[in-house]
Each structure stands twice: as C-alpha cells, then as structure tokens.
Length: 319
Image (tube, rainbow, N blue to C red):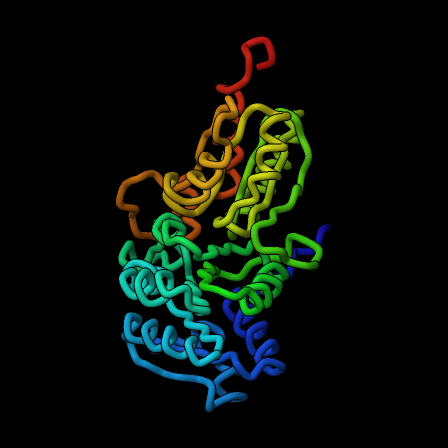
C-alpha cells in the first residue's frame, strides 16, 4: 500500500520562510490587515514585534505605508486575502507600488476558489490578469511547499515589486527542492502529443491527469510554471514547436492570466492553444472539493478535459 503524501499548510510554510529570511536581513518588515496570523506570520510577530505592523482592515492604507517604508530601504511584505490585496487594493497597488517601482512584496493567500463557502466576494479569479498588467511587477504562483519556500526567498532578494499568490488548503510536495529563478519553469513530464502548462496548486491535479493519460498511451509535455509574469517563453516555445499544441491549466479565469501570458509568448507560432480554467462567469459557492469537481479542475475533470481537447486537436488518423 502506498502511503498518503504528507500535506502541508502553504500559509505556515510561507510565513516560516519569510521569518527565517528575516532573521538574517533586518530590512524585512511585515504588514498585516487584521490577518497576519492567518497569513502565517504568528512566529514573525512573536520573534520580531518591532518589525510587525498591524493596520486593521485597510489594505489600501497598508499598501501606501509599505510603499513609504520601501523608500527608506526596508523590504515590506504585506500579506492578506488574495482578493483584497489585488481587487480592493488595485489603485494603491498600481499607483503607490507599481508606478513608483517600490521594493514592496504583496502576497495574496487563499487564492483562487479556496475560500469556497465564503463565496465569490472572497475568490480571486482575476488577480493574475490585473496584476500582470502593471508594468514591472513580477507575478509568482508557486506550486508546492518547496517552491513556496524558494519563491519567498527569491521574492525577498528581488529588487522591485512582486505579487505572489498562495492557496489555503494543505498541499503535498511535488518536486525536489532546489534553486528558484524568477521567470523560469520546469519540464515535469515529457511527451509529444501536446504541451500542458500549469501553475499554482492546480499543478498537483494536472500531474495526476497527465499521468492518467500517459497510462492510456497519450504522452504530454508538462511544463510547471511558478512564474506567471514574466512567463518562461523560451521553455514554452521550445515545447510548442515540437508538439504543435498548447493547453494551459490554472485556477483562474480562463482568460487574462497564465492563458494570456502563454498565448502572447507563442506569438507567430501557428500552434493550437486551448485554455482550461474557470469560465468567464460568476462562480458559484460550495465546498472547495465540490467547486473543483463542478468546474472540471479536480484530477478526474482535468483528465476528461485534457483527453477531449487532445482528441479534438489531433488528426483524425491519430485518434
């Protein structure tokens, strides 16, 4: 019997990574909008109380102060609910952080539909789309605990504004932990029928779906992409040139986010591109597992969608 994989809280993993980095870099300060502990910063608050700033529920104000702190040479990290640090906070993110090119790190937790029963007001299904439109802002979407730790270190080392989205439910390790380079993805499975590009927690179910199709004799290139902006165009183009068909997978609307970043980098390549994500409509409320199943983003749903898309994109003689 195969042992169940260990599941890890992504928020605690992230908070621990920042706390460890901050022990060696006194420039790191943390800003909270009444949710610092939920964002994984309980240990940071206890260890560095003078570097932990609580603002109450005012994301806009916290972002403005973060921008000001950055001008003094500090490295502010502001983490809260993803929908609130992007949608609600967009003007401050745009004008105070992006336009000013400030060295501020904004982290959205419980991204995608992970707030499930709290409903669409707490979902972030357009955050990649709106934040990647801000020039000079890096958008990170790590896929497992090791990448969260490595991405946190890369984010704090990077000079300039960064947005990182992490989930809420516990996740499993997918990869051997190693260096994290902003803008670089990894080939996790090799195949020749089509190229699948995934990001964030959706990658776990995508790996399961790609492996299920492999068992049916359909081999897919799987590119796991922890950076949405800038996306790893070189890796995507190399794979797309071989397979001639790209399929993106993300827990985000199926437009504007990873799908758009990949489509833009494909440029003049004459390859088919299909996008799997949330349909461009208001998403229902439910349990997280139920929502993933409803929208075909669980392992079974992704297997079915990938199988159908690949079949539709292949020559009749190959089906």
